[in-house]
Length: 502
Image 1 (cartoon, rainbow, N blue to C red):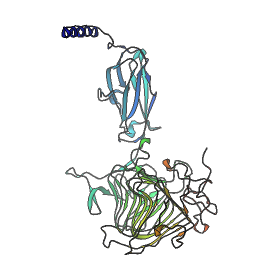
Image 2: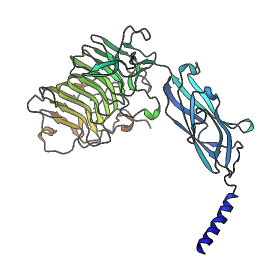
Image 3: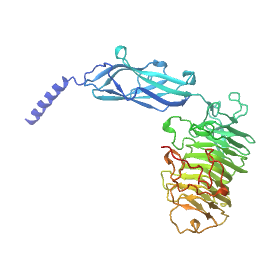
Image 4: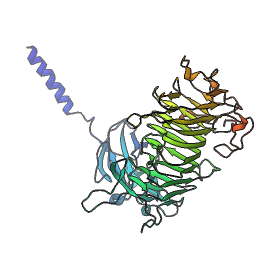
């Protein structure tokens, strides 16, 4: 009897449910609501796909509705693509009879790939609209994208379908050598500010050639790409001080994704790699972001001048120098997975008015690392003939941001003068900052420099900083990294102090 009764009740429920009209829809009446009335897709290079952007559509009514058509106004010719609640429609352009339940919402995801010729020639904007319904019930959401023209440099494709390659450290990698007589781009060894550059693979500087980056140049590297300065080749970066936040005179190296989402994501491209035997490098007013290794020096010849340079968000190192001679002034490095500055296998270094900070998310990083050995090298040790830091800040989120790796088999000469250090307590004789006057003079330990905004790579200081007016005038660089005149006694680090914006 219980089984029959249960079947009877189930039959009644089934009968009632088959008569329900809850899932019947009515036609849309043009009362849809949207999360935004204009979707701005961030700037993209011509013919490079954008990130995916989101629009949310709401049905505030008590009725399940059917939207007869959701489409791009330019139809199948539109350079935008959509998915509507996971559906791709007709090539992502046209969707018919889209159901939206009462008090519910649906997601539309939008992306674009457009050429500069598709954009408005006066403002380089490419636009379209998403149309919902038609006639009296028509509602529209605008789509806007800025398309940027660029010079694209990439490996050629061989007849057998393989890509052109160059050899780096004994390995063949996708790449090409810059050509001073390229039929399409002219002299590829002179980079100018006329258009940004987008590089695929490694761009190599040929032997006995010099690549020059003029003030205001913008270079964007695709994933796994970089710049290779080969044997007897030279790099000259000739940026100058800028007067606005646009850094109009700075040379900028970064990834090729222009969307704001990617502005501070590490590891978007490889490195600027300097081969053993490369020579006569000079770097001034360079901003380098989001690489694996920023500047990677492999025993280049001659002293390298690095001035007024910012390096941020590198997966491994900001500067990795192997048996290198560097004279550095007004350098700022922040966020590096292993070390901001790592000088290994000896060399000769002088850094003045530099800010080495490291707020990488792990606790095993350093702002500065010095070593006179290298595993696998022959011989394994090489003398560190000098490592001098004057009026510098060495700080970060780890307990110890300054690291010495000394091997007794080779020389290890270093000295820090008027520097602020982050370092925990230790009995190690190498880190006696107050009593070891051979290596340390006027060292401030574990006092906060009070940077303006570390997470945004703004390492400016004001008068409340522990680094304020603590420098030695004997080491002063007259202008700071932004071109401001330093007062005396000078502040530590790369920035002349000033009041923070309120």
